[in-house]
Length: 110
Image (cartoon, rainbow, N blue to C red; front, side):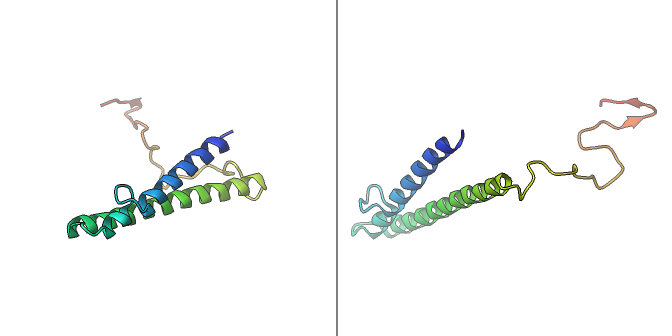
């Protein structure tokens, strides 16, 4: 079952991300580093940018996990098929992607 490894990785990732952003220790937390009294303005700005980027990554991780959970619930409840009913249709009558077209009745390589 993949729920246990997912829960472990999600817990570790989210906990580390929140601690990295909001830890009161300036050696660890981005916001604490930005608010430190002896921080150079460039370092403070970089720490704020790092906090924003880490926050965006946490939001993206949560979005992916919630989307996957939503799709899983839909499949398990029968509202969404596991596989599509029909394969996707191509747009033209030419060869499929990666298929070598025939020239003069034979398939050529190069």
